[in-house]
Length: 319
Image 1 (cartoon, rainbow, N blue to C red):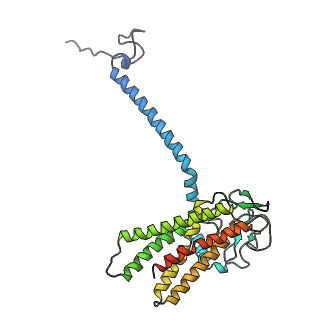
Image 2: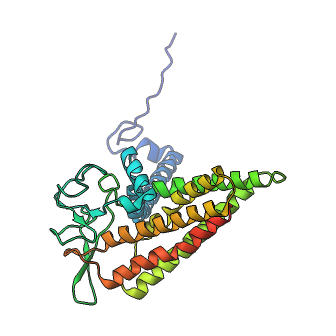
Image 3: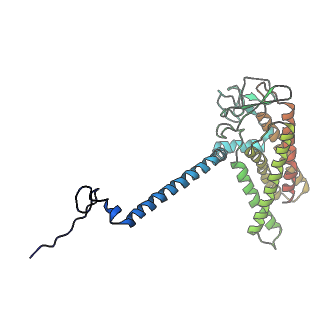
């Protein structure tokens, strides 16, 4: 019985007969579909690699914005507690700006913040050159008197309690929306709290944010304080007032209904937030010699006044 013979297939550079130079490779000579498949795979890989590179380039364009937003949420429990104390009792706080070589003392410790580290006290005598935001090299802007007005980018809130953050404003805005829904629902038993009411409150807050930021940017441009005020700084500054709004509205709801109590709480919220705004912006625009230029000081006052209408309206609508 004869054993069946199985033909062999040569995949090498030689032809099917095994002789040198007998033809092309197997995929090229005997299977044109495989060659087309290989060409298609190569073309697909090139297209995919091209789109990946385009996506990386587009993402790299937005990386500075993403990194800036992330830095505004670099907070911890210690910072949040200290910042809430400053926001609720700004009149009893010593406002200092950090020295580039000095550490940050504990808030409320004996001797005050900045005395042992050489930090510059707002409104005090001139000290060593310092900046509120030592982590970023400041840019020098020419003032009306020919001097330099140092304006630095924000440092991490973990390193400076007077640095701006977006965590506290975001949490306070959410708290205000929930508190407004609860109060409006309690005052109107016939109407139930729906998602539409929550969205309407958030929409009103967004409108006030937009108006306040536009006004502050316009004032800064008109006064030539800084050509391009940071948008995130303005959002954080306008969002801090919701902490006092929530506390004032909650306190007025816990006490017996009285316009006197509500008026006192509203007045304290307006004064406290205005004082905090003026002092923090004063630190931000302080020169190396400890002075604040007149235009910068006017901008701090205008930044405080621009938020008064929104603060009053958002407080009164829940009474």
